[in-house]
Length: 303
Image (tube, rainbow, N blue to C red):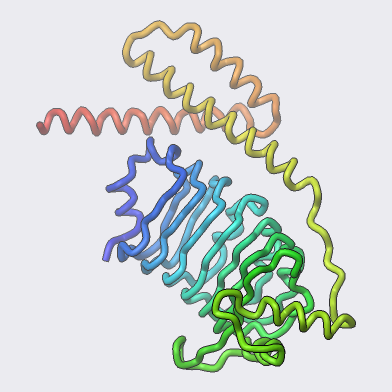
């Protein structure tokens, strides 16, 4: 068994991590906490089939797809670190979450896929009422037992709520109450689950339906502006490193320095980052560059 952070340190240089957009570290028998804070531009993560107990995503804001199924995660604290308008797909099935409701998912209004099967989630589906983009939902073998009336069905294509006590932890699950309601309209489709049954149930129970709130229309505009600011910062730090490298190689970089000062001024004037915060990021980049240079020099000496 391998400590997750040790594996990252051995296989991914810190100075290169911000360039990685897709990371697949599934089925590597990794354990402990997986801290991906340095993978600033990560968009897709597959860390399934390990023994991870915790995830950290500090300062990562571009994650669209996460598959962390079949691990030993016990809490949802890492969700608070993700951008609520960017995440599209997340598979949390087959973990060891303590009994909790679905409140943590309510801000993720752009979610298209949510799989939380084979976990101890409980309570109502009400927390998902504003997830109007949801296309695939799987709550099989959980203790979620009510709230069908809250599910948005304008885009829902796949809805699974099966219960198979002999297959997972050999116990009965309260989701069977939802399954019983929908089973009246026919058997579960292997491909689409109870999606059609849900529509029929809603047609038969119009008095129970809830008028759902529409997500804010300005979310996409806000997201676009935020991503632009993050890209500006990322570009500035890349140019800053290039400038330091020119100095290290005794090259004249007067023009580069002038451009950097202009970029730095624009970033600070935007109000999204302070002068001191930018200085701190610059120092971190320099220290990392020096560490990598020392590492390379040591390897040359060894050879």
